[in-house]
Image 1 (cartoon, chains in turn brown, blue):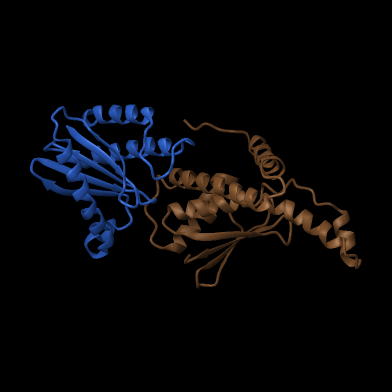
Image 2 (cartoon, each protein chain N blue to C red; image 1 turned 90 degrees about the vertical axis):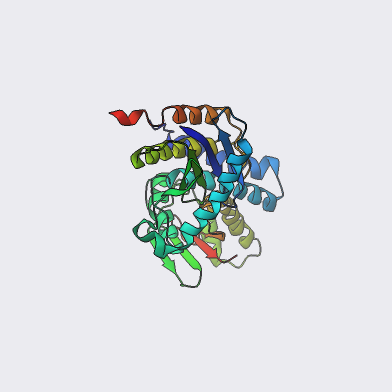
Length: 176
Length: 143
């Protein structure tokens, strides 16, 4: 018997968690907040990978583990698969999700687009603040991927890139 | 009759060892479990011997010792489950079924947010579930 949680509850929980850590627990210390959020994601990723690899035979190599993350793991967590997977065959994988569910409902400040053509020294801070606020929300999924892969025996580093919303790219580097 | 079950982490650290006999040869059972870890490693690292069973989680009979039989199971996350039994006629399907239920109980125990990964499993619910699974080992096969 599978117990279910509503998706909007999970969305709200994510938003509130990031807001809580960034504005209350570690206000003015975004580095610490980011690390804490990523650590939470790490433990959740470990536990999720235990559960979702239960019925499956063991993986032969790193590529199979990454494909498991892209297909089965992602569809269990987000109800869709990773849209694009690229590799440089030297230990770096790029996972691209064209409509990342946890960012899909986030609004981007429209004024940030207008100032990009104006040469104003205060403009970069407005844009980068929006980018930084957005990137805070990505530490948790990065932690999840890192925790899942570590539990499968593959230590790695995961970073995220949001140059084109709502598409989101996760870069996984092995060999740490 | 099942004598002992054990869960061993991926660095060969014990996460849960429980023996089900009243005799106090628990130390001997711990020793048997410890020796079986070497056999598990050998099975996993020697693909030519395993043949078609290379990527299966159920490793089968690891080795017989004295009057015990030791079965192994390796999960995707490199966690090993060891089962020590004194039965003479154990069906393969029974053992697989046991490990499947044991794996479910293990996953539920590890999903507990208060469980620290890498430390021993201290959940009483897990212990109760395991003893239920152990008690029903071999009886459900009659049907």
